[in-house]
Amino acid sequence: MTRQTTQRAFAKLNLSLDVLARRPDGYHDLRSVMQSVDLCDEVDITITDTPKIRVRTDRPDLPTDCENLAGKAAKLFLERTGLSGELGAEIYITKRIPDRAGLAGGSSDAASVLRAMDALLNTNLTDRELYDMCLSLGSDVPFCLYGGTALAEGRGEVLTDLPPFPDCGMLIVKPDFSVSTPVLFTELDKRGFVNSTNTDALLNALLSDHVKRGSEWVLGPLGNVFKEALPPLQRGVVEGVESALLNSGAAFVTMTGTGSAVFGVFPTLADARETDLTSFGTTFAVCPVKKLQR
Image (cartoon, rainbow, N blue to C red):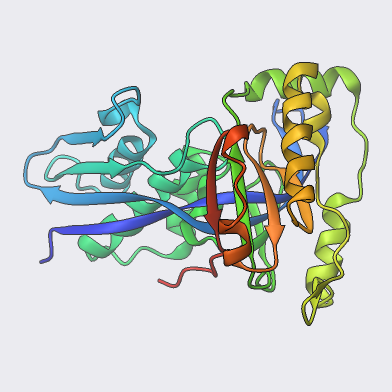
């Protein structure tokens, strides 16, 4: 039996993000088009005969072992499959996805661990069984299991596959600040909820193949309701990055998740790579990734 494998854990972008209402359970109903991109962490997983989970990363500031979401995923997998008393796992994560950026790095690492352990241990879990594990770890983890392009609803866990986003380049800019997700949700609760049309417009464009016609983009603007909930100083930084992306040739721009990363859509990867916005933060030129297959 193969005991070791390496998985790529792809980052996630919210091409649109609307918050509809706060639910009785305290969560919020969301509506978002999510897209995986080829910025990725590398997750090395080794199955061991010692029933212990060990997680390390190349980032000393990140949690280890079962304090890390990848470690929680490994522990959950072994518990759900009845193997927790027999086997363990050693996980090493090479981080490339910045944390606290709205890019789902930790969620993607966790999903990669579940995929890898199912393959290494020949447990042949159903998609539903893997999905249920993902959902118990976090709202973004189910999408990160297979990625691609999808409509996410509920608290992000109700997924509908969509036609792939057209080939293009995207430039992600991560400003030098992070955002508190609970604080932004609290701010939205104070403001009340506005039913925007960001996601509906994008969804209609994808389903009708009206995102791009030849080399011309015909999709309407992208959007993220969390931008307006940012503190004024941070919102100003995000808007400055958006303006710089548009002035550099991006067809569309928006913030992903609750931020602080912002991205722009360019005609090609070469266009994204040739755009120098390092004065605004750390940058990553990426391409969309199609849905992973089991």
